[in-house]
Length: 366
Image (cartoon, rainbow, N blue to C red; front, side):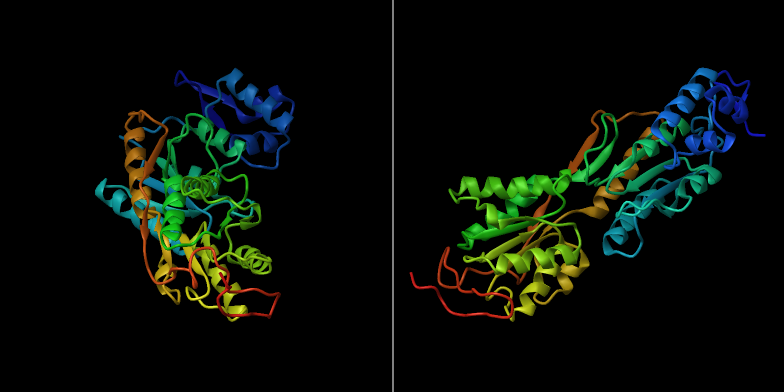
């Protein structure tokens, strides 16, 4: 029978007592304690209130003298260069702090839950957690609070709840720099392919794009503003539609390097060349940006430095030192490569037009 320790240190109520108090089964009460998703909100509320009322504590607060010097890094997937950059920064900072780092695959970016990651973390008694995830669910935040585990978010796509510590990048300034670069080359018809509409980070990059256009006195054309997921396929479809416009853009700011590769693919299908026919700027400066042909001009997002900063903040929190602010933001900078050039024929002049499979090259008469 699972028995907790009360807040005074004496033996607390069993999970069966909590379940009886809340009017649920022991397995249901266990799901709430472990942050499982498959519990109705009303049931979760009754169990949580019973846990608080009875003083049930699933796990004591981290004790540096007793707990292992172990940190969990939770990522969507290991099969990405983004995760590799985050892991590199976190591992180096953990080594410097004398900590061991365990990488855990958590809930998928597509919304599918991970398989038992919370149970594994509970079993090994991790001292703290870094999350390189788009977001956490309310029940996952509740699980962290219930288990009193210190944690920091690394570059969340959505703004975390009040009080949650996070480390991100200067996304608005990155969008501004990307668009200013294209404007300086002479482009006026500049499109943007952003991420999902409700994501805070992508929204900030699009806001920087809008600000740069406004400062330059260039109208922001609604048909040039497209939203997709962060994947290559979505950007490919949006770029194809941009090319079908009566006046297609001469340059595109894709709000991630992965989406920029989707733009490349759409252009290649029309036998258009980067940057001769259309300039492209990405965001992230992942290894793919250097490997692309031509090499991608992009905004550098310092993922390794962000992860290292997050781990150092976590170490402070483990020692009982609460950071003053909840958001730490690292700077972004433009990395110029071969994917951008002045528009052919001068500012604002279109040189490509036509539907799928139909391309006309040349300079539109002034």
